Image (cartoon, one colour):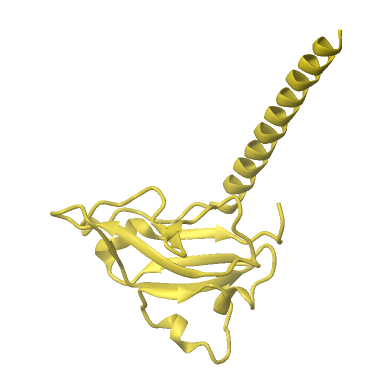
Length: 157
């Protein structure tokens, strides 16, 4: 009888853990959908390369949209596949904040208006408020499909 109680409890515990993991993944997925905005990109015919569904890298790993928020930290890079070899390569990009449809002017951070291949994302996010949009645009028009607009949510899940 004791063995049945232990086995039953273990099965219940496994079911509970599985349910909690599924709930957390669903919540993370819903949050990721809220963060990802329409990238406002329309084809120009100049595109060259292989463009990934998630070209944004944070600290060398694909950006987790579900965990990304105004408190995120790390080195942001943007990648694409090379046109002939399909090897990944970093591309030049601009980053800026948009609040209520207008670009946020950040005094002293002129380098954000200069194309770069990597940047410490906290340099921009320190000026962000929940609800702002982080806009990441490629410098070169042939890299247009990597443009991303992310809605910045508050910290936590």
